[in-house]
Image 1 (cartoon, rainbow, N blue to C red):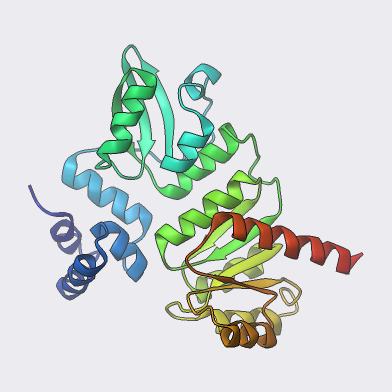
Image 2 (tube, helix red, strand yellow):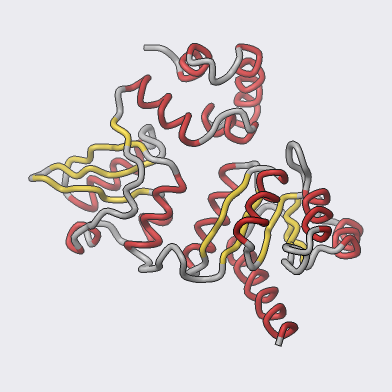
Length: 273
């Protein structure tokens, strides 16, 4: 059986040199290769899903948020569980349950799925975004247009997902970008109510993004919160003086993110009255 990295190289998604760098980083950070490659910005979720499917013959699913799912199917898995584990029940037939999942090698989650449902679980690969969208609509009963739109700009996939889950659970519509340039395009086209951005990113960092946001009349009023691992008083003061509306230190705490977001949105509404 070929390794994931070799398949990605053969498909010309990444180069041998990129694979070598990723493997070195994987050893030190003890993360799955796919996660490391996503954090490096050299592979997308969709490319990773396709590569895993090709390597291990897993089925994949896309664009399933708009399908109809009977309530008895959704009731098989508690909402807190699907949010925490990023899974979504797709179909039950006899003693088999097809479940959308991002990591088919997460044996603990697979065993928990079987134990909770009493069914044999068939994993179907899907991206984090599609699973979260399906959870938001079918479990949290939100529409794609409901809630205030918040743009999360973060090149670390695990951190971005953690923030996304916390905000979706509160009813917000979450837009995602992995670098400043991508975020700027989304900000102009979608006009989010708030932006949360990492300070250090490829192509354009958080400071560059804020500068571009404030320079454009279409986006200049959007508040921007900085997310950073540099959490000293001096760093916080620098960020606020530069024009950021707030400052969230890493490691990310979901409750803190939600609290800061609500505070900034409340302040923005009062200011605009």
